[in-house]
Length: 460
Ligand SMILES: Cc1ncc(COP(=O)(O)O)c(C=O)c1O
Image 1 (cartoon, helix red, strand yellow):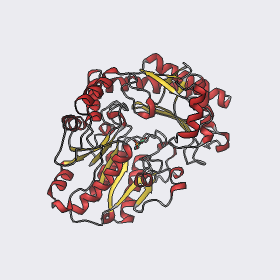
Image 2 (cartoon, rainbow, N blue to C red):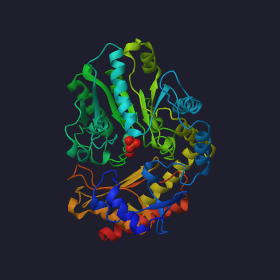
Image 3 (cartoon, protein in one colour):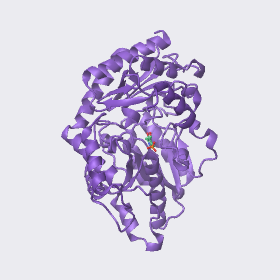
Image 4 (cartoon, rainbow, N blue to C red):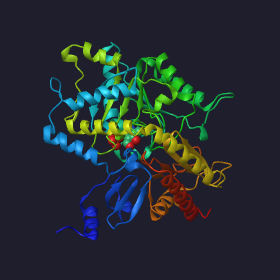
């Protein structure tokens, strides 16, 4: 007999370990049973707007039967076989070719993984491999940024720039260096006449010189930060970062795990600034979360290095599920939807509406320090105690947590990030990353719910 809702909750609390597990956040777990478009239904039949596309990934929206059918058809034919070298399958070959076309020059080849952390792990190892293959074995370090999120395997945790992810798992892997990011709202260390983008790019160059360019393999960054704050860079940041990396022979790894697959109104976010990475890490939106899949795209130069080494020096890196035929078949069907429905255009149009709505609702709100958005459906409101000084709320006021709970009560699910410390650390932030098929009316409701929830939590 099926378990009742109360029995499921009890079993969850007893037997299921969740990401970021702690019972304090699991006293009343939500159990979702259905998704359609941008709407989720819980086990009690209550509906919620999905303000975060699951976990920034359900780009085509929930309930797409054609993705289920693509998976079923591939499973019936060949669910799985190893794609270790010497063996391949049609969905993996086809998807790799299509991704290279979408990413554009200079991307040339794809290695598939099962998710974002595996993708970034693969990127770091590939950067080291490349420099060893080029006779520069000391180029091993990776420069990453404060407030970055790159995953939680030991290496990607070490690249992640948020101390809460390290605390109980230290020591971190050696060779990861953190620098400030481009965060115009609170940019520190700006020299007279410098823009925020120039400052942050200069600090990257200074870090490379400090560490020694001969020791640095790569720089990694999310084109627009996700979990660390939906931090939008200044427009002059990424072009300068590219110049700095090129000048010092440092590979540029773009972590497009959130920003890829039309999320920002382009296929990939670095396209906004016409910046070309050396390695592009992806996951999430490649299947819209219907099955786990990720990967890295690499340039021809890196592919050539892989092809040129002696067999005993090969790129000895692998996952059982690399090139998984069923996951790749779903990826292909997902891209069909994105192309057919021109989801990059929808994301741009609805993103503009969301940003305009948030600006109208919070533009003169006494606690809305920064409103970020406008590049597709990726936005945030950063709440502060005092707009003038940018002073943050104390952590024990639990502003983000209370706003999130008020939003859920009003029928919208999203993520928030609690204040990270006093200014210039990030304040309490509310994130928006709804499915790209969200309607205008749903966007407007999300804004209204957020406004009401903030009022309930803060009294203003
Ligand atoms: C930018 C970014 N990189 C990497 C990851 C890690 O992906 P995964 O959770 O699939 O390992 C995430 C996950 O949210 C992410 O947002």
